[in-house]
Length: 244
Ligand code: 6GU
Image (cartoon, rainbow, N blue to C red; front, side):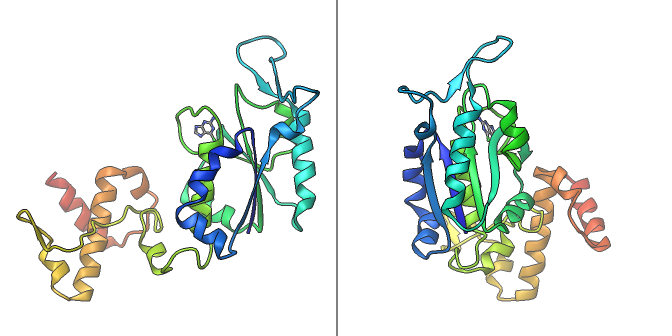
């Protein structure tokens, strides 16, 4: 996969991308990440990229010319045209389903929004998709782009040590993950549930599935509404929740 990131702050990405799973994926050649400074396509001697809004109002708006010029310069640098994604609080809320969808593209071109926003013609005529990472305000799209890249890259085959962990993770099945424990079995008198030490694989699997359901019901009932449960699981869950 090829990911281009067009940003006013390329240096923000160095730390996060030089560590962890993203760095390993880059080393393994699973993903190629290219940072481009939007300022390089700024106008005039001062490399201007923003201007005040037509019609008045506070703040600055990213001008269309530098963004179009940047995308048009970056696009020919790789074989595929790529899906152009604008990071903006007005975008589709990022979910695991959207991450999986984005991971299918051979190339992504990420545009990090800034200031009061971007000129509407960029949304209308340059961008294929708009993504937000949550209902809160960030100073720019950069942290959102980092989040998106991390979530997408860990989906790429070979990015994780063991692909098995993907299926079990929170949100993989539309549910939160079950409680995890490691050694010691007794820490300050707080014991690991006996079932996990029993060696009964089928019982462990059942316990985990039920914990996952219970946890999702209590913490994220919105997720549970969309999840796939058996009739037996629904009955069991109802009984458990009745005693809360
Ligand atoms: Cl993608 N950008 C900004 N500026 N704020 C956000 C966001 C993006 N997602 C959530 N808040």
